Image (cartoon, rainbow, N blue to C red):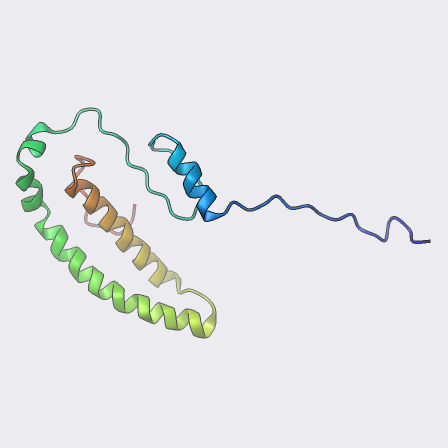
Amino acid sequence: MADESTNPTPVVEEPVATPTAAVAEVASKPATAEVSATYPVSLAIVFPENGSRLLALFFWIRSILLIPHFVAVIILAIVCYFVMLLNFLIILVTGKQNQGMFNLLSGYLRWSARLNAYTYGLTDIYPPFRLEE
C-alpha cells in the first residue's frame, strides 16, 4: 500500500486572466487614474472637470503648439521601426528581448499616446518631450 506522504497532493492553480477578460474588466469600470495590473498595457485618462475654453475655441493653437512634437515623434517613429525589426531578429535568435530596445519602443508608445491625448483635447496638459512617464 502506498504511503500518503509519498503522494503529494495536487496543487490547484488559480486561472490566469486572459487578455480579453482583462480588457472587459477594465472597460466595465469608469475611467479613473487607477491602473489595473491584470493586463500588461493600460491607459488611464482622467476626465477633465474644467477644460481650457481658449484651447477648445482655437483648436488650431494646439496644432501650432505641437509642431515640434510631431517632428520629433515622426523621426522617432522611423527610428523605432528599424529598432523593432532588429529587436525581432534578436528575439528570434536569442529568445530574449533587449531591455534598451524595449525601453525605447515603450517610451515611443507612451509619448505618442500623450501627444494624441493632447491633440484630441482629452487633456489640457502639454505633453513633455521625453520617453519616460
